[in-house]
Image (cartoon, rainbow, N blue to C red; front, side, top):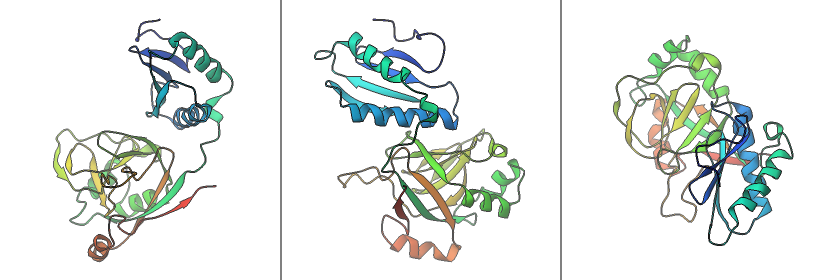
Length: 251
């Protein structure tokens, strides 16, 4: 078995060992739509294969991870099978998995609920109104879930949104805060400090530990944010954990 740090050929995609029970297929070093598409499509394909002994298949921004039972699986044989699947097609051009959903989420941009809209817009070279229009017009893919339970990384915005994180942390944002940095957005599932700039606030609760499916969003889902007035905030909060959000299947 190769060491965990040793790549296959120095090219992408490549397969690395992670410890004694993991394999990681990487499609790139930096985030881009093709690499994220490939990771999502490969995950779906491995799940469909249903290989014995594979206990978990997950994705990050540009990679697919398999965890297997090393006591019941020949690790080298599994790697060879995985390598054959990976080599069988160009995953960066693969169709995204079926069953994905498009979420339309009401959001209050700016105001006292999201005080950094103007700052973020200026860094992107936009007026606040234009910034809201661009965000609202973009279908943002859930690229991965991470940092906190059920928290999505959403992307990508146009290139002028390659704005840095803050040098100092915002002490705390609410659950449902929509924040931006480096062409990505994240919708916070917990109240936490952050270095991302908050541009909007939603009433959507993403992490529901009392539910049989505690994470509301799944990698591959898409999200659009619909601007609403500050006066709508109390009504959205009263609408329950969805906060006025609705979902439809993507065909």
